[in-house]
Image (cartoon, rainbow, N blue to C red):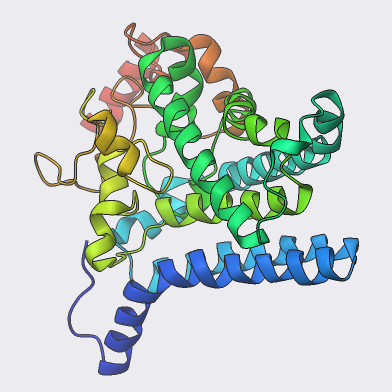
Length: 330
């Protein structure tokens, strides 16, 4: 979990900078850059093409997560991408997630036309206030949806695609089954859109949610000081992902833990130490690595019925067993 202490002094300093600076840089620095692009270039100057600048900013977010995980990892073996063999699949998940999010933004004008309640949105507020309000509402809505996804079998089957992963790192924060993402977007963003959330606010909100998911799942030994128990990041979120039966049914917040406190589902510390091998779903010890199989999973996995046969290791045929015994004897 902790890197050897024989590092040179500059490396130790860099590691401490990452520990304390990673989350603020991602949440405030990069989100601030995205906000500036939208508010100053798109809204103030009318340069619609500037929305495209959000894409490289998102790329920078993933690169920063990758670099921070190398410098100050929480679990060293979570950085072994070859051993886990899930990088290609996670990249496909990122493409699917971000494409769906972009399509959702394109649908905002249509939704506003279908539900002409524009007067309810506080357009007189400064844009930063609108983004903050939108994020607080979305944070609560996503928490509620997340809670239900652990309580209702039909939703858990979809949500298990996110929980089946054997490690947490920056690339798998946005792992979602597309059907579950659609439900998330409808519950989390549709109410905001219906009352008139403008496209610029939606773009910044979408970027902030993506960055939050990256930080929340990053394999970075983040130090948050007094905010640690108020943000669902790092150790708090590790507990949510443990494969200890229902013990991970806690800490559902997207970022804030206040909703979990009100719901009675907040747990700051695990009942026992969490190891790097404790992530996943206990019923799915052989969680599929491929993207297609993960898309199929909700339709073959039945909660409470154990692991689907298609994912269990194939038993040896008599001929294979005889050959193995013969080879061992030789």
